[in-house]
Image 1 (tube, rainbow, N blue to C red):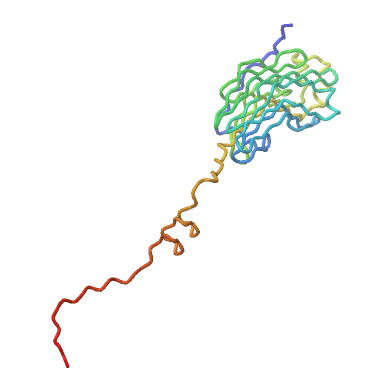
Image 2 (image 1 turned 120 degrees about the vertical axis):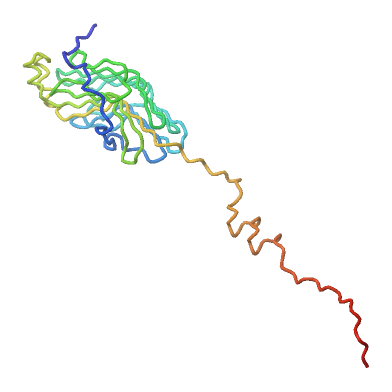
Length: 266
């Protein structure tokens, strides 16, 4: 079925400049320095649930997961399909997330495809957001952060990028915030009347779909066969070690013979 685009909702407000880029520790503050992580979806507000699926690589080893875990009371409200999330050595990926949130007469749909970070940059293939069967956003993933949505009702941030509190690069495919204000949109003919109550009840709800964090290369493991520090006083090969058995001991110089004739006495 062809979706009807909501008027004005598919136009980007504009790419965020560096001066307005967000510090995203509150969005994804889980990663530690030198680690990478990824998760599929997270909700804050009336529908409150932690990141799922969620993976963290602390040593550079690749970790993947697609197991979904939602609170029991939300299982009938949130339909969720995640291909996989992956975290590795300074790389993280969310392959694809499709979700539908159904509450009373409200149906909110969203898709994020191929969000990936490597080092201090990220790519995003495609995003989609629909509300009540109508299209809000349906675009290829932009290089920079963009703002879309329904004025006063729904704010949709696409490819949000910034840093965590630890200074790690992080990116989110979609950050959807329900603002309320449905009554005005209904008066303007942007939304059907039956969406007013469920949207106003969800005011303040934030849903993050697809998040990756790249925390820098993992530390190289120390080779146990590496020689000790040459300045280590216990190193038997240290030439300055006073107990080194190969360190030559100081000796007195050998006297030279005297060849001059000496007078005979007695």
